[in-house]
Each structure stands twice: as C-alpha cells, then as structure tokens.
Length: 318
Ligand SMILES: Nc1nc2c(ncn2[C@@H]2O[C@H](COP(=O)(O)OP(=O)(O)O)[C@@H](O)[C@H]2O)c(=O)[nH]1
Ligand SMILES: [Mg+2]
Image (cartoon, rainbow, N blue to C red; front, side, top):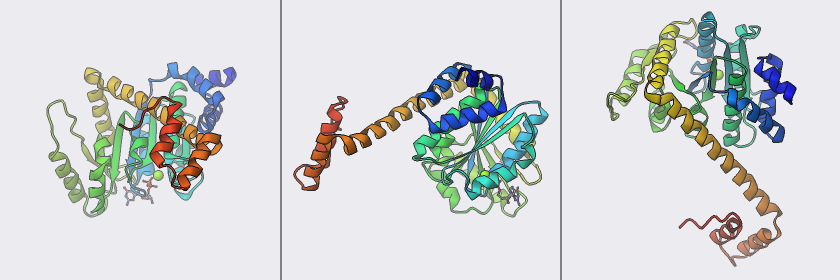
C-alpha cells in the first residue's frame, strides 16, 4: 500500500491505473490510499465537459488534450457514462475519439461506468480525480453525459464546467433550462459546421439574459466549435481560462472547492446510511418482524422507519 501510494505520487501510470481501480471498488484499502493522497490534492484544475450523448464531448476533449499538451501540461481524462456498465458502446467511442493520445505518457484516459447507484459513480469519479491530482496531472477533464437532473451530481465536480450543445436540438434547450444550465460556466455550441448554429447560440443567449445579474455574476461565454477539425478550440480554452481567473478572484475557487468537498462528505454519509438501512431491513430480526406486521397492515411505513432510525437517534420528519 505504501509502495502504491509512493508510485502514484511519482506519477507512475500503472500505479495510477491501479489506484483508480481500487478507488472504484472502495473498501478500507481504498480509503487508506485516498487518505494518504488527499493532502497532495488541490493543484490540478478540474474541467467538466457535459452535454447530450453524441454532442461531441469526447471529440472536444481530444482537441483540448492537444491544446493543453502543446502548453506542456499533463492531462488526465475521466470519461464517465452512467448508462454504461464498463465497456459499453459509448465508452468504446470515447476511447476511439481520444485514441491518438493513447501512447502519450503525459495523457491518462480512463472510462468510468456505473457500478450500482449513481451516487457511487459520482464518488468514484471524485476519488479518481484525486488520484490523478496527486499524481501530478495539471488538468483533469471529466466528461459526463448531462441530460437529466441526476447527472448534475457528477458534473458538479469540476472547477469549470463546459456544457456542450449542438444546433438543432430544439426542445432539448428547454430540458437544459430545467437543470443543467445552472451548472454551465461556458457553453460550447459544437458542430458549428452545421446549419442553425447561430440560432442555437442565440437561444442560449436569450436564456442567459433573463437571469438575475450583477457585476459579480459570471456571464457564461458562448463559444462555437467544430471539434472535428479543431475550429474554435483556442476560443474555448480561452473562455475556460477567463472563468478560471474569475474564480481565482475573491476566493471563489476556494469557496467552490469547499462546497464540493462538503457535498462529498454528505454523499459518503448518505450512501453509508443507505447501505445500513438495507442491511437492517434484511438482517435485523426486529426490523423484519416489523416489516411482517407492515405487510399485514398492523403498522405503517413511517412507524417502521421510525423504529429503525431510533437507533441512530434520528427523529421523525417533524
Ligand atoms: N459534423 C460534426 N461532427 C462532429 C463534430 N464533433 C464531433 N462530431 C461527431 O459527432 C459524433 C459524436 O461525437 P462524440 O465526441 O463521441 O460525442 P459524445 O457522445 O458527446 O462524446 C462523432 O461521430 C463525431 O465525429 C463537429 O464539430 N461537427
Ligand atoms: Mg463521449
């Protein structure tokens, strides 16, 4: 374990891969490793790329890898797909899209699929990012599919989040409005080689214009890109850089990171509580008796939950 930790710190690629696998499976060894690495984290910049499937997130990530590599920065990529258990088609696609960097020692690409519940994936992603951070990667790109509310949890893990849209989504802009828009710091209207790019950009602009603003509020830039040929990538990276500088002022980055790690603690607690509740209801003799009584309508769900929760000194909802 000590050896693995030292190898990760030295940036050893195979150790990084092993550490991420360990973090994914969880357990005491993983926690020990992550605890040892935690003080070394905080140097990397976390860049989230989210948006609907097929929007060009992986292709954009590929362009950004090239951009940052040209500046001599080490880049880690976590391609997260909640719908793919490990080696699903989308993840395979991500790999292919970033293939040309596969042999570059300054680039580490990892796919993360759903194991169990989404909260678990979000935690595993955060932990994988910490491993990469401690290993000395300067920029960590986290690609997530962001279409519903639940994905916000995963994409909320970045310092700067780029929301990728494409022309002709139409109604999807309304869906974006519902939740994902809140988390976007930069908009990339990708596939700008297609018709309707101006309209798509204007629609986002209109949605942004109705928000409450003051001088302190960050106005998310809207950048047009063609990830296929790299058009607009410098603009995109420039927009990310401006946001980064905005966060650096007045302790905003620090505040954002504090909130993130606080939420992380909360999801660790929530996920443990969930496991605990499940094991209580399946293993505890009294709880099972209560459940039988519940099935016979002799008690009610709140009463059963209340009895179980007494052990944790958690009151009823009132
Ligand atoms: N026409 C066009 N196609 C693109 C562009 N960017 C990506 N694509 C294509 O869109 C498809 C999906 O891209 P991908 O990066 O896998 O999307 P992801 O699912 O969001 O990661 C691929 O066939 C890409 O080649 C672009 O700017 N213009
Ligand atoms: Mg992808």
